[in-house]
Amino acid sequence: MAILETARTPGTTVGQASRPRARKVTRRQGQAIQIASLLVVLILWQISGLFLNKILISTPSEILTDFVEILLNGQLIRAFLGSAAEMAVGFGLACVVGISVGIVMGRWKPAERAADPLVSFGNATPTIALLPVMEVWFGLGLAARLAFIFTICVWSLLINTLAGVKNVNRGWADVGKSFGLSPLAATRSIFIPAAMPFIFTGMRVALAQAAVGMVLSGQEIGETGLGGLVQEFGSFFQTGYLIGAIISSTALAFIAFWLLSRAQAYFFPWIRAMSARR
Amino acid sequence: MLEILEVSKTFEARDRRVMALQDVSLSVRDGEFLSLLGPSGCGKTTLLRIIDGLTEATSGRIVFDGIELQGVSRDMAFVFQDINLLPWRSVVENVEVGLEGRGVPRPARRRRALEALELVGLESVANAPPYTLSGGMQQRVGVARALAVDPKVLLMDEPFGHLDNFTRENLQVEVARLWERLKMTVVFVTHDVDEALFLSDRIALFRTNPGRMSQLIAVNLKRPRWEYNVRADPEYIRMREVIMDELEVRKLQMV
Picture (cartoon, each protein chain N blue to C red):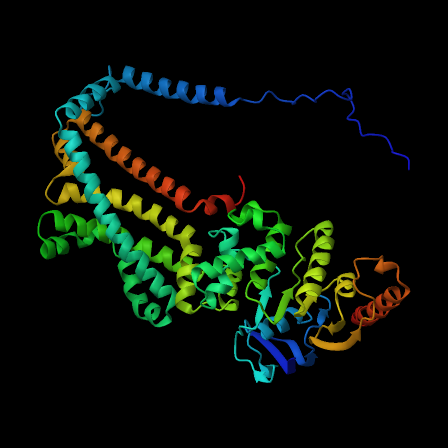
């Protein structure tokens, strides 16, 4: 049997690897560009400080010194830890309630019908409008702040969990039915794990909302934590300290997101493995 | 014996009524390998799902060993075209699903699941996540999952439909071997004439519009069919022509 010609690309010699047409930007170069552009922004910012009014914005160097100051005197750390704890508790409670109600609603029609109007109403209401109500019910301290954080983020958890449970892959549901799992066993073994991608999406959205709720409640109820610092520094136009507090809030949110993504990768590696390849 | 008695199925969506199956009657003998063969849309998968209890018939009955079936039966196991392994479970945990459904205690479950994996030659990947396996291996796990519950009837819905030709031919031989060894009844849905001829004792031919059974053919080719070149057998060639005629004629009529 004759073997026909091996294919040749015109312009290259057989055996030599072909070169890429355009010069590609390497990963190192990409990182260098990012750092360089950041530095340019900071330098321009610092220079602009020589011309702008101190009240408008502080220069990076001033922010840095202010930041270190409130860090060292413990003010920032106390506020950070206090806020982090409140956000964790509020978000944690919202997860427990939101996810379990979402599962029950998803698997039991009567529950869904009964709770649906309540959920729609609760989700549509801007939580900040309920702030005075919470102060009346829960007082002017920790309980009200936790209630606020809880209320602001529980709806996302519930709604996303509900969607996840109802949209479970039909093939997996068939497996449960065909192999004789009871509805309860199927809920535990198939529907809940299958809904995890949706549940995690709900958690990501809720986490962002909880971060907002944490700062807002700190500002409005009791003036404590990072929200309290924002309120205090803002009202005295201490922009250096203010920006330090804002950056800390952002950092807290970033840390929370990172922890969530680590948790997903550790407990549910299959979600990433089975998503559309990038 | 598995009896399908005047089963019909109509699907209704908004403004369309589709008669997926019309008065299908068929008896499956114990231990036989029966294929349901036909083009897409002829209702063969619907019929298999009705037998398993996954879909409810609009009318008609399924009777197994004299008892009318209501919903899912413990005597049957299903192998899915989409394979449907649960990605959050390891391979062996996937195989255990049917045993969990039947209330088998934990140690026995693990033992039986591993035995089923040995039947398909995959005991070495028992603890792997299913998405790390090739398509062919995944479907073998699907077969192991069905075999683990010791079913009297194995229902296979175009199990090799999503796999490449090479894998498909190898798995056909594996299924034929398993059937010879375990001697259970198999109802096998396919649109591949060669696959049906290679595996079956009898083939039920299906037409579309509406979905119904048109012929029941006995396949009298010598077994085991992997030990010789069955496709060169004159009887095989003749039967293939008969089947293609039966199905082709419909296509011409549709034009």
